Length: 509
Image (cartoon, rainbow, N blue to C red; front, side):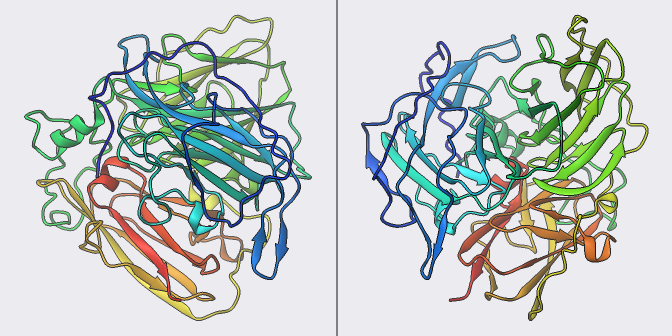
């Protein structure tokens, strides 16, 4: 399942990203499925923003593409990077940068991207995380797409049906861990949120060695040890039912990054006192939960996984892998204030610095304690009712299980890909009961849908695409079966996914 390309000769990334727009009046896809093209005609690394396009139109047969006016060109390439200033290592990137280019579009646009695979001998894909796309555009090999072969180009095209903060990443092997990800921001047509600044903050974890090697060590085949195995994890469950102590990480990282920068030379941003700063937080870590806090300032949470929630003020929030939160902060007075993203296991942190123009950015590298008001799912309330339309209810009880001796992770006793699909019908209401029988946290992500997190908000349960399930915890989610196709449901800890914690959700035809 893994193909990270770490044994190939790397190329060094040079210069800035190429930014190129290709005008395509009169060119349109004949169908919504992706189109594979021979190499040639795609140049440059990536573009930061797509110009506004004609809104998608609906027809009896569904979405009908209109002639493209602008399109993005994204190249997947292997380079050598040294983001933390400690060691240059092979990386797989979009356009040679870490993170990849920030994509910004507007609600109602039609998005089109030509993705060229420049890797020497590895396939790739792009998954548009959290976006409501047709199944053929979802970017999961052998489920929604065939992988993009080397020296081939694939066309992704779909209407933008939502707004908010999302991201994109590879869904092949460990390419995401090696740097193949970026932010995807959809600006709302009439956004009621007013802020003087709108900034993406992506947190990630970084290795100085091949993630495939780390995975082999986790499975006991490499002669090393990537992490201490939680005691008592045998046969897919927990010794005695409940863990004596949760295990917070099974991969030891060399660095943690914020917007691609290590703590030695952190990312900075300047704003005047009192100005509202919208921070679009994305946890792009492969297996790290981040605890986020800003020195001396509260965080006003206004969006969760791209969708608006009733504002709630907290001091810190714990973000699982693939979760997204929009928070608003205001610098109280002139000075320099450090934004901390502390690894849940306390092994390190990523930092950035918010400062006023008259103050030199001075990073505070002391990790803040886990104190104060921590965001809980029960505090999140949607601004309007999220009650699902009436329909037949289908329920699945899905224990989350692991065998640390073999390093196999399962859902209800089955490890992907040797796992039965979860079969549903269009129009049904689907409830998933997630029962964590392991000592580790699992951020569970459903492709192609938003689900209600049933944590006590009644009719106003928040809608999310990723939900954290703590050790020994049971979480219930429900969604409307309104997007037919084949969809992936999996743990967004990349190593747990590679070891089997995934299922396919399939609509009956």
